[in-house]
Length: 439
Image 1 (cartoon, one colour):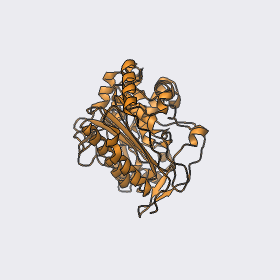
Image 2 (cartoon, one colour):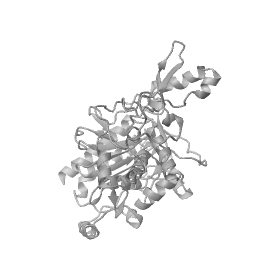
Image 3 (cartoon, one colour):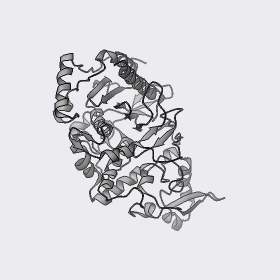
Image 4 (cartoon, one colour):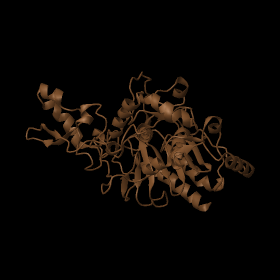
């Protein structure tokens, strides 16, 4: 493959004098953040020294130059501010625009963490309960049906759920809702409904549960339903609720369901990995009007914006003087909430969209409120009890409360869980922890 010949965008790394001045200023105000004018410049790391990051720079530069990934923005931060920024490659292969710090990405399921925060805000206000039956906004969730199997003719067999769905079930993906993308039984159900007589077909739920609430874990539309519940309880459309109660307070001006023209001009293109490993740029998406928004996907963000959110969660729910959740609520988000149930490997049903998904190989995985939790330390990387998830186009994040570090890694590649992207992501992670150790 031909390398990308344009020089990657590099960051300004501060002098020792800058570091001392910035650290002193942060001590005076007692806070840190990526807001307004502050977000327009790189915050000064306190340790380790910038030279310890040369290996990460070289690795990301090599990967983008060889078109292993089209371009990448990788950021890491500690309590004291930005620890590392790496910005390399192109927004879209074959075009001139280099990747920039403010490049806009489709972050897909990474909206689930925002939706989880919104729901937990309503729990704090006693407008929602974690363990009471969820509001009966639709029969599919208020009176759920469980798919018990298929008869000899291939027709679906449904029964009432043994217990109500709770917000805890939804936030931890133990509700029984599944995405067809990673559930063969859900795919079979969708096909089987076409065999039903017309009258029965109309009565069949479009999204039955694959198991009784609380019985096991399966990634699916649970947080999509949480978004619907947030709208119903707050009386506000989801995009309005996010903007008023999370995004604007934190200064996340580049996170939205609908892009403005100026933001659209900064959008990264999507690329597809071919069977031989080469990447091909997909056509740019059409800017179509949208009437509804999902708590499970469909949002845009930038790496600095999303880092702002996870830094707030790293810091116990507050950032730069703005609190979005109480510390005790954030502590609940960090605790695994699914008992003896383990998070399994997601087996793809559509290889063009996703590979099998195992983001923490060889490690026991649990689920908190909004995030997957690795129960053992990752070799050379994050601590046990760290939080993580990603988006369909290979955007990822982690929050490590033990080491007090959070990071985002953004590119735009299909299918999800791309082996080359994940390898680069893990190299980035190990580089961050090696630098912390050296410091």
